[in-house]
Image (tube, rainbow, N blue to C red):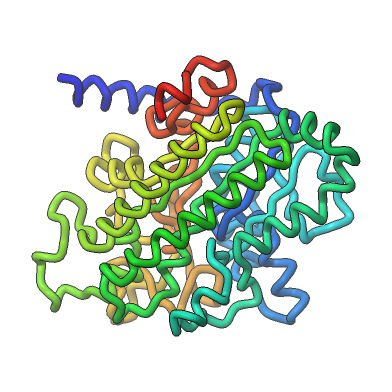
Amino acid sequence: MKRTTLIILSLLLFLEPIQPTPSHKFNSIFSFGDSCTDTGNANVLAKKRSWSSYTDNLPYGMTFFRRPSNRFCDGRLIVDFLAEEFGLPYLKPYLGKNESFRQGANFAVVGATALDDTFFKQHNITRSKSPSRKSLSSQLQWFEELKPSLCQTPKECRDYFGRSLFILGQIQGNDYFIMPSSLSVERMMSCSSAIIQTIARTIKELIDQGAKTVVVAGNIPIGCQPKYLIINGKSKGHSSYDPSTGCIEKYNRLSRHHNSLLLEAIKKLRIKYRDAKIIYADIYKPIIDFIRFPQRYGFTSKPLVVCCGTSHEFNWPGREYNWDLLRQCGTPNITACQNPSTYVNWDSLCFTEATNRYVANSWLKGPYADPPILDAHTNKFNLLARA
């Protein structure tokens, strides 16, 4: 009965559209993360190094902006919906410069990891070549560079950032994605503590700078991502698949392990920083729900299939999921599905606008944020009691 009630409440919250009516609860938003939060930083870096950027081309941006918008999505990201909720403009990429960042800035960048290169070198892990090989510490440094233009004295900064919303997007996924596929899940899990410690240090640093409300996203179910579905392959046996989702269970176990450690770290920080509201934003559970019960949310297409990927005319290992590493969304002759709102996954890296809208709603109003962002702001929840 409780399970049924929760599902009904979740559906009502998910299906209720986010209205662009300003709530005026925050004066600015500062966001950190990876491709699923980036609004243009990777594009700036790519152009500086004469790299091409997938997001320069349609079908990126086709749904809402009707043009390429430097987002790895057909439309809006989770952070865009959060900005709308609080009557704030969409976040400008920090590297865009020559912008006013009084109402917020986005430091997220494609390919970013929580850990620095030093960690991967020490563990003999080779990162892929990319113009945006940035870590969480790099983004924090950008934040420090921006500070003097926003506030001068420690008190002024505490007052200003105390009225801001800080978001740490699901950056940690890349720390696992760049690890060789030959690594065992147990070996990957051994790196989780270092990743969590880095995220916890970042939260601490932001609070020390004056942040009062910090939203921390967990890890996605990486066993549902095309890369791992293809690497695993049907030839390795159906026993490795979760029959309720079609995802690779051992990799989802890795995500759950990571999220468990992250939530534990957040609870400890809540005790230390009694005046701050540290919100755990769960993205694992809603994505799993969308995959298990896609019809309930309007995802009438196969939930593991990518909307924007390689044409089905080709025969390659990822054909079942419409994805190929060498022929990705945004490259010539690659088209998107006609109706992205019926898909969960946009381009294998990030999700569709429809998915982002539902997740944003679940973070704002529940049930997939602890506590919901709107309730935390009104002090409805006692975070210490929830620690």
